[in-house]
Amino acid sequence: MNIETVNLNDRSYPIYIGKGASQEPESLIERIKGSDVAIVSDEVVAPLYLELLLKALPDKNVITHILPNGEPEKKLKTAHKIIDHLLENGFGRDATLISLGGGVVCDITGFVASIFMRGVNVIQIPTTLLAQVDASVGGKTGVNHRLGKNLIGTFYQPSAVICDTAFLSSLRPEEMSDGLAEIIKYGLIYDRDFFVWLQSNVSNILEQDRSSLGHAVQRSCQIKAEIVAQDEKEQSIRAILNFGHTFGHAIENQAGYGQWSHGQAIAAGMVLASKLSAKMSLISEDDVEVVKDILLKAGLPVEPPKINVNDFMDTMRADKKVKDRVIQLVLLEEIGNAFLTADYLEQDLEDVLKGVI
Image (cartoon, rainbow, N blue to C red; front, side):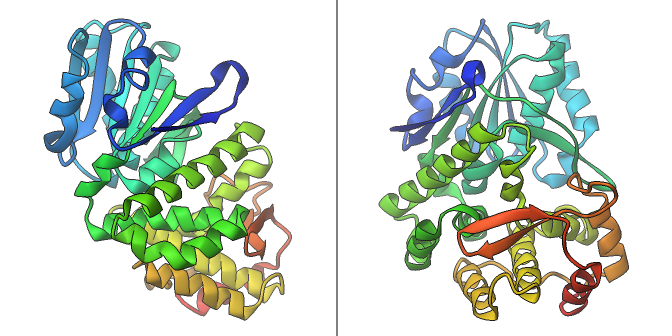
């Protein structure tokens, strides 16, 4: 088991990475405060792994809350139901919430933990590749609004993240591809050497080669931990983690939540951001083709669905990164280096969208 650390002074916490990590007392039992534990999972993950987790908590008062699967459940109504369940069982400020699932479960569990009794302990146990390298790390929590993704949320750090790579063995190929979208993003925005390594190892990761998969998860968590430690609440460098996301969130919203997976939408969004970067002569057209090539190798789309450009732009304007009513975008200065900017021509953005939508 490898351990990475998100360094945030008194809010610092470990990320445990490895096969069987969820069964290690160091990573789980020692991170629980009090005797009351609520596990939030979903109807896909719970039948696979809930009993295993319950066996690791023999001396705790455990309740479970099982959600329907999918992005449509990521809403305030679901958060209310979880809170009702906690209150009905007498849970208080010494409770610990544990997420056991993918990004939706991680986000909504963290959100509930941040607002219940003004904040209780939470441990993230992500079970998808995407959640292990993204949603579970960094303290972003939230739910969706009909006008946009993650528009209601908080920054709230967990006491630990447990990336048990054994859980990934049950993922479908398309779920592995979803996770690769975020892994590839880390190489594009922060680490060219990692990107080059990924170009040669995408197929190994998809096939769940233990060594390649372990390195991909660990390096992704390292990069995110480094960035979050510098900028916990996204006032500066952390914004680059949103590469492709302003486009991608608009794709998810316009296509209808659940129609396009998060990884698929972010992949197409990264291509759009790369095309705008090339249009502004920041990167070359050959670089755009390199981005498209690795995403195609990962089994991801490189074109968005057919969507009305005006509606798409309206959705982008509802994004959290809009400042002074101007859409801020993360663009590439080169492969391995990204930056946040509002210094682009809106006509260039519209031209890029019209070229593919």
